[in-house]
Image 1 (cartoon, one colour):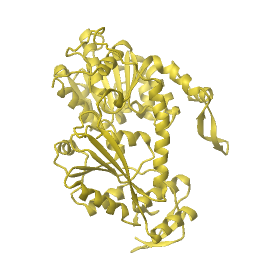
Image 2 (tube, rainbow, N blue to C red; image 1 turned 30 degrees about the horizontal axis):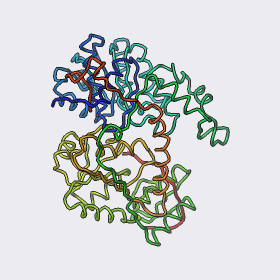
Image 3 (spheres, rainbow, N blue to C red; image 1 turned 120 degrees about the horizontal axis):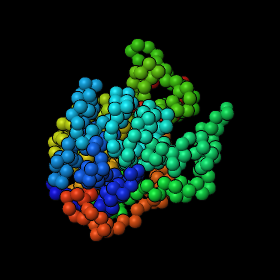
Amino acid sequence: MEYHPHDYQQYATQFILDHPVAAILLQMGLGKSVITLTAMQELFRRGEIRKALVIAPLRVARDTWPEEIRKWDHLSGMTYAVAVGAADERRKALTASPQITLINRENVPWLAEYLGKRFDYDMVVIDELSSFKNWEAKRFRALMKLRPSVKRIVGLTGTPSPNGYMDLFAEYRVLDMGERLGRFIGRYREAYFTPDRWGNGQVYTWKLRPGAADEIFRRISDITVSMKSVDHLKMPECVLNNVPVRMDGRERDLYETLKQDLFLRVLSRDGAKEIDAKNASVLCNKLSQMANGAVYTDDSEVARIHDRKLDALEDLIEAANGNPLLVSYWYQHDIDRIRQRFPQVRVLKSTEDLRDWNAGKIPVAAIHPASAGHGLNLQAGGNTLVWFGLTWSLELYLQTNARLWRQGQKAETVVIHHLVTEGTIDERILQALKSKDRSQEALIDAVKAQVEDVSKSSGLGNTSHATGARDRRASGEDGAAATIAV
């Protein structure tokens, strides 16, 4: 396919070429991967880099980046190898001597140990920079050991601070080795934050000092470019719709019992089973499960509470009248109950699954935000997403929505349904997502690029070297001395 970049894509590519350290904060659907690949191709042509490493979520490294390289005509001569899977497969990919090596982020510690001093990549691209926000994680520490030998580094994400400004420390530390926000988390906290909630000599949450956000923006602005999809693309309308779900009196009593007493007893064929919420985090987790319709007991059995969300999902499937529907689930018992009620539902996991979805062959598909939230192109398969169970993570929420609401979506409207059980923690989760989004938008706005017509001044123009398009449990709350049957 011939590549005709938007002005903002030319701008972003030129920014990468001009800045050995670059943070590209582009919202989902703006084409981060092809923008970066076009810059990499130019750097290869100039002889400024010989080998590049792309670190990405597993499916993005395995599927999305190879697909982008094959998709565009101007990238046809670029060579790559995918270093995922078993250790033998990864070693084979490394010895193939391609221009670009694609590896999943979980294998960065392995790569650092395997190559050691033989690590000779001139350029590193971190696709989803936000996945390196934890300065204590093995992947962060491993990459920091390799960082001094890297001449060029690019961080890509649409959600740089999904859980607050504290996330920025590690992300920029791995980019500029601490030049802008410092080398130590303690000093970063002292400079920009004050304790918010604490107890037993421990600070649980921090809040920004007055004026700190502006100072952080100022310090990172020279290596950061950010843009919003709605500013640069004719995006389809995105309609957010809450579908209310109501529990009956008995179901509500069970929920409230666990919430108030932190304990609930259930009856099964093997005798009485208990649900014990030992702390606030476990309580939140259990309440969230109950809002969805089932809950894990202390010995991992599933106690069914209600089928209200399954009923609501059935109504949505029927209303879709054969048009594809994508369902986002969170707990394993959610997808088990969904597939029990709707055997036609297919969970998107493999490359074949993704291909069939985009080809319109799957009427109802399901994804888990943690495994499919980043980078996957699903917009060709449908325009309706249903959140069966909600997540506290703004990053995963926004990224999952962007699988459909993105560049290349042919429908004029994308509809995102939230199944919300009234009077439960579901309502609090939605409110938390909205609140976090306000701080996220503030960061994006503060470092927003003033896009120029760089095609006149850069060497890229409109040639083929120009720029372009890219099971686990949550937290909850509850407990009580009522009895239900599994």
